[in-house]
Image (cartoon, rainbow, N blue to C red; front, top):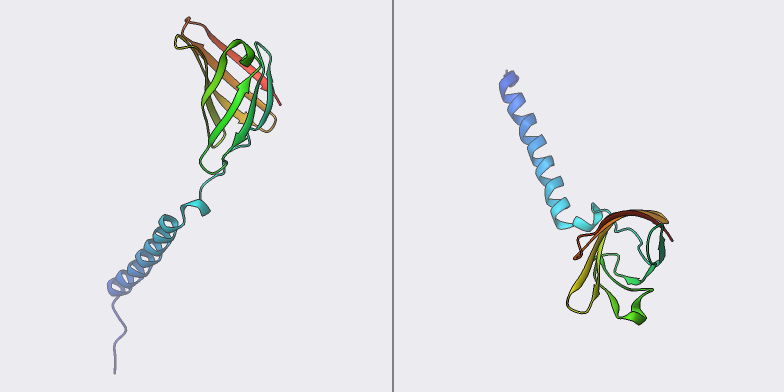
Length: 131
């Protein structure tokens, strides 16, 4: 007559099965990170802030977050550079020559955003914008 396993052996076997299942799920998550990652928000379009001058994001790589665009002051020499989207957050810099920089950061939510810019003149301003 064969005896049933003792409860401690049964618990060890159950823990082993759970550990194997968790290890398998972790391996899958590491092998396919894009399946679990959130997509970057769509930043493309012309954004009109409640304070200041509009800018246009002309393209965005939704997977890497790299983006490019221009500002309404481009004809005066201002350039929009270092554009990046990460999830629902954006960042870009407006430059004029080698001396002036305005760093813009904020959060995207559909066709609205809230942001802040800090420039080399010491100005810090919060804004909202719509697309």
